[in-house]
Image (tube, rainbow, N blue to C red; front, side):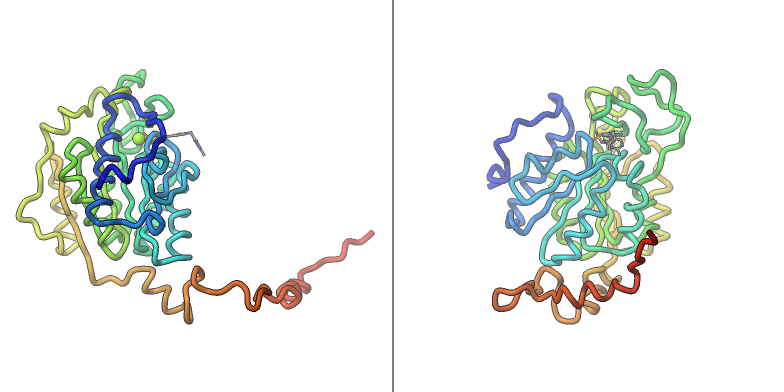
Length: 297
Ligand SMILES: Cc1ncc(C[n+]2csc(CCOP(=O)(O)OP(=O)(O)O)c2C)c(N)n1
Ligand SMILES: [Mg+2]
């Protein structure tokens, strides 16, 4: 049951926050996929979005601002048997963490990245995030934004992500399906979640999104990249949601790594034998002896 994935922690989001729609869709998706809590890892950065692991009863780590993706990558590479999901804000993933966002695509590591796209820095009181369009003035700004917005889906596409989707925090049936598709995909998946921030974003409200969202129907996501790019580029005042792109041919990073793992992934390798550590300390230390410089006294 979906509610079995909840925790007893007090939820600290503002009343009406789109994050409630995201967490409940996550519970429903996990329940339908029968995710095992000890084999499912939520990794978050810092932000309102970053609080997610406290509210979902699976394994989880609340890391540093911008560093959820490298942390999640380490978890997945050490133990490819785990399902790893990143929850990050638009500032977290595309501001301070933008380099890591691109690197995950290049690796096509089997991780789902869910971006809470509220177009502001919610936790720090409403500054412009990288997805806030130029000339837009949300209520905490004293003048309109003078920077251009990043387009997250085209950026993910050219970075190498092999599964792209978009959904709306207030449409739980749709969002739950997109989460399931992202988890089931074998490779780097990016899910852009349109999330109203009721406290700091008075422009991109629930009504704003509802008026513009157009669900992709009869769209086969297994298309050539250029065709997908053009489809996204032709978005005007419409915002497309659904499964937008899927590539099942490119090998995932776990597959590429497993060839170099010799026999087993790091998580499956024994660390001791007959009660003694396998690592030969003397041999290990001797490797570094040539680098030791005796101080001149
Ligand atoms: C290294 C570092 N820089 C800056 C901050 C301050 N900080 C905390 S959350 C945040 C931005 C949050 O915005 P976003 O990532 O969009 O998440 P949201 O709160 O909107 O979910 C910032 C700048 C920090 N915690 N650590
Ligand atoms: Mg944000």
